[in-house]
Structure formats: structure tokens, C-alpha cells
Image 1 (cartoon, rainbow, N blue to C red):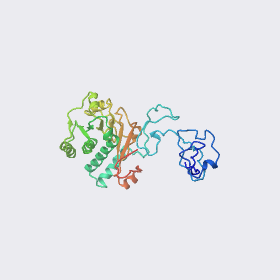
Image 2 (image 1 turned 60 degrees about the vertical axis):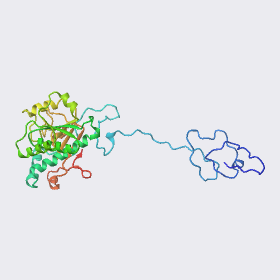
Image 3 (image 1 turned 90 degrees about the horizontal axis):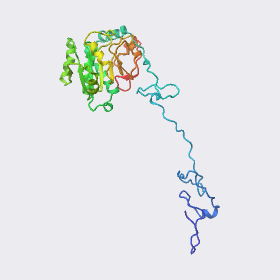
Image 4 (image 1 turned 120 degrees about the horizontal axis):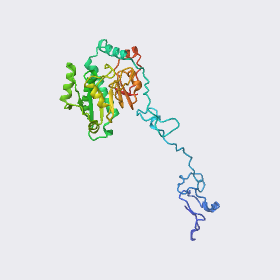
Length: 337
């Protein structure tokens, strides 16, 4: 602070403590009366703001406005959040509610309508069966990468077990495993009953040429599966299979999958479920990937993530069957409900 003085005389001491925020000026201390003691802000640790050019020696003590330090909302309440979390009870309790049936906002076609959609794609739109299986298998692999990104896997090796049945769902599982290999995962295939269909043999050859290992048997000791893999892709039975399939080797596979602790990703319809009525003694998957559109059984899905792979459907097919598909962001081929 600057103090004027008479030449030849010593500079008088300031009548009150100086402040770094005081404005420089001509002998302000002699013009204004000294400030009383305790003029500093009540919170000494809070610094004053820069001085304002108002002509005063020092601005009034600064008191910041009060802020609302409300806690952030839980992830389940954030709009647009794709992650699925536990549903908290009303009132903010700390314990999650018991599992409830998965709410699906889309129209759910019946089993007959799903077959009619596929038939129209094959006959009227001239989609090839190999083309459909390739589209669905790629979409399932993308859904697996979204549900279980590589950095989030609990094990160092990104291992995934793909269990394939003898019908079309098994062929989709083969294509899914091939694309997972391209996405830097390490899939292993269990394909106990190989189909004689030349198309399915081609999918098998492609996996073998890409050095994807095939298991000769599925361990009945579930702990071996839990320790070796991060997740299991269930491509055993699909919408075309009857509920409670009891024929071998599917029955033994389902008996093993019911007891594993690692996450299960089911393709289209969880194995052992009826496509319309839902679960009836089948497995309980953590992730469901619906092909083209969710089936009626999706209403009973209790897992944490539900994906739909139906972006490729022509608009006229969507309109004819009143599918009302969700909006797919960007160039995504699957979307999480």
C-alpha cells in the first residue's frame, strides 16, 4: 500500500493492518477512519476476491452463495444410461427389490409370426439362409463385446465358451464364435452333434481354419467351466425347439448350464424355454440377444441386459408385422433395451 509523506521525514506506520486486496491510492488511510478490529472475513481461510475499482480502500468481505451439495443420482435413474443396475425400492432403501420380469417396450411377435418374418425374408426378399445366419451371428458377437468388454473381463485370458446345438441356433453360435475371434476374444466351441447340412459344415470348417478349438466333451464338473471361462454363449436350442427338450445331448448340456456361476448369453430364446410361455425349467441367462425381434418369452427374462439385433429388417417388413423397432444409434447393428 502506498503512503504519501513529507520529504525529509520518516514514513508513518499504517494505522491498521494492510491487506493484499487493498487498492493503491493517495493516502487513503489518512482520509478514512481506521477500521475496527475484526474487519476480516469470518472465515479467515477463504481468500477475498480481487478488488473492484470502486474507489474504496477494500471491498466488503466476500461471502460465496450457498451451493446445493445433493448426492448424485444412482445409475439406474440417469436418463439414457444403457447399463442395467439393481432396482432400488421406493423410498431410497439400501436393499434391492426382488427380481421382476424384464419389461420389454417393443411388440413381441408370437412364434408363428417370427417364422412368418423369416419366411418372408427368405422367399420375398431373397435373403439366403447363410446370409441371415451370418448377420445374426455377427450381431450376437457384437452384443457379447458390449456386455463383456475386454478390459472388464475378470480373467487375464478373454476366454468364452460357445455351446452349439444341431439346428440353426447352433450355426449362429458358430458364426458368433468366429467373429469373437476376430474381436480378439478366445472362444472355445462345444459342438457335440454336428449337422449334416453342407451349410453348417462350412461354418464349422471356417472355425477350424481360424484355429478355434473344439471340445470333445463338456465337463460335468461345473467348477472347471467356472475357472476356465469368462462367459458362456448358449446356442443350443432356439425358437424352433420345443420347451423342455429332453433328447441327448441337449438334456445333459442344459443340466450342466443350470449350475454354472459365470454369466450366460442366450441367443434368441434361452435353451429349454418355450418361445411364447417363457421359462419352464430351463437356464437363467444374464444376457439375452433377440434376433430380428424379441419373442414372447422375453417378458419373463430376468437378466441384466437385453439386446435386439434387427436393424437389417426392411421397413416394409417392420410395418407389416408392426414391430416398431427401437432406434439404433450411429451404425450399431444391435441395441440394448
